[in-house]
Image (tube, rainbow, N blue to C red; front, side, top):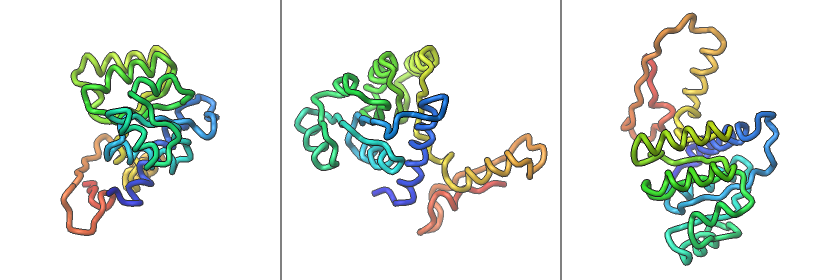
Length: 195
């Protein structure tokens, strides 16, 4: 189970993505989100999207029955038969948290339809697939985001603010380590160490 602090951090990722959706910073509110994949990470993405103020309108799981069960359990209006069915809905953003081998095709199909994507790691099965997603997003002027949440942790945000203020001076290199197995009770934001 992800902590409330972790959910808030992931929500910050979705909120940042929401600001990217429209260059004039006025995306449709609430953003309409669909989530492909209802396992652990898919459920985290649903919670994050909601915390960021988005409306989660549909989900897709591994079968039509599981999609409907997940939709009911997660208070989502629609459970579709297959992930590609999400693309025919009126959505702004598609969160892709499916098995890895399904990422690239679904991401490309969403981008071709003008749907922004939040694509879980790994982006693709190989560099050729990853580049095709990157290139299609650029060609269509659409943001494609990978939820790398550490950038939104308090220590990361503080370091970014310090750098922007000029306080550390003319920095060339900032070595940092992430210590994932710190003492019990420490969360990741307190385990990030800057040297």
